[in-house]
Length: 305
Image 1 (cartoon, rainbow, N blue to C red):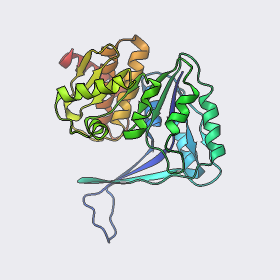
Image 2 (cartoon, rainbow, N blue to C red):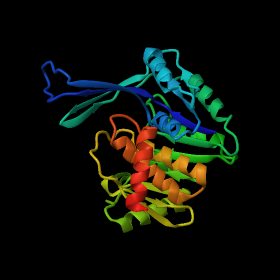
Image 3 (cartoon, rainbow, N blue to C red):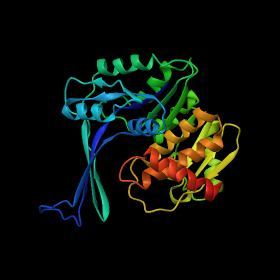
Image 4 (tube, rainbow, N blue to C red):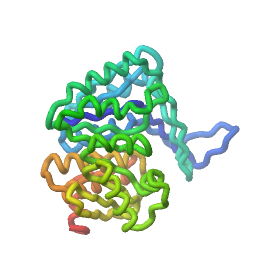
């Protein structure tokens, strides 16, 4: 089973405007609502790839109920901790030429509610995959990733971590199967601006020395690079189409990579499917769909092999 963890899920409220001015009433030209959160995004794209997963995390109030209802389908088991107080956050994304985001803080999580999540992590078994992704709410300890990974350290669990800065670096001692930084995040970790392919490969291998098995680096308009556990470099191009949405593209890449590897055990194919899923989300208003993934997979193979 694949398990995903989203510590601070949200409802993403996306508003489109011709223009935005502060201090006056602005009228939208369109609106969309999505269940948000990196782990949730991974589960939802896995479902489009016919892969089952269980979604862990915290939900609260009427927005939490909406998230749970919106995420649940035949391929996703929702096993969220329901908090006694507060509401799950609403993130506002204003698209009016430039994109502006206003992200909520999320509800307070007590020690006992955190312990309930950790007890669920204890149920993960040998051969399972655990995807931990996204930011940590202010009411949780900074080492929450480490607390979760410590619970399964003695088991043979395939760990995937998609996080930034210390959250990522501090997880490396648990030898995660996959991490997915981008160039900017590599720059932040090592305190040096990463621009070239050679620098990207060098710093990816530095992360491997610290414990990561496979390092997947998203390169934006340049595609993606994978340094696999054997030190081999794989590259994937990017398809050309109008970009409608960047939110969730990286999460979709993670889902595609995990699904591709689970199905074939082949890193080159995993990178290809991950890249296609990331592209599919970028070319749609919401997350990648099965139809778009299949369409782009054919195009990708014709263009890049």
